[in-house]
Length: 236
Ligand SMILES: N[C@@H](CCC(=O)N[C@@H](CS)C(=O)NCC(=O)O)C(=O)O
Image 1 (cartoon, rainbow, N blue to C red):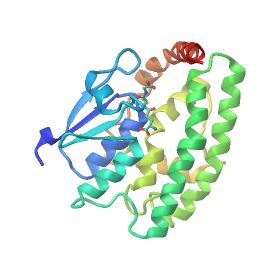
Image 2: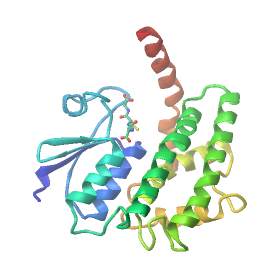
Image 3: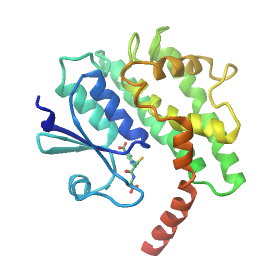
Image 4: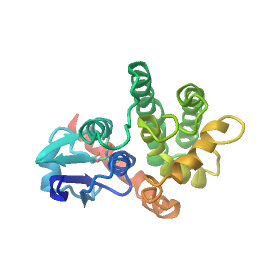
């Protein structure tokens, strides 16, 4: 596949974009990468390729846009079947992976983004409590999905590893600025060790942004959240 046939519209701060990039790395796909500054302005190509949500990532393959990170990962897995599989081969394991990936987006991501957008200490505290709560079932799911192996996906990184591991950069920022340990020996010992393994995997390690650089970017988010809320109120 020629490089020009595959293009990814992304943003270095986006965990969702990282999902697509890890999947492309696992399959050794050569691709063109276009960085979008989604906080400030969006390219014509992004608006044309994802007119519904206007969000990154968008994978453009042979001129066809594919949107939504988990759909992109599944697409990559199906199209580049020569590399290692990302989704489990067993239908029940596949269904379980999809269930937990939806759980991550429904239960982990909302308090994570609420913390980053929060302006008040109380809102931050509430978000931390919700993040901690959401990690407990995930620790248990790791035991079941990994079947005693290194990753959710078994011996190597799979769908669920990508779905949750993409958030480790922001998780570390929250741990640092919040002075907390979201992953710890007491409540999430398996996830704590898994996070180390995941972050040092060759398909991943160059993609996780530096914690301080990401934290610096994070400082703009509460202001952005305010503007976003004002825009939503104006539209109602
Ligand atoms: N559910 C989407 C979420 C993607 C998303 O939220 N992308 C953010 C960057 S992290 C974005 O492009 N935001 C632009 C906006 O909200 O206008 C996915 O999984 O791809």
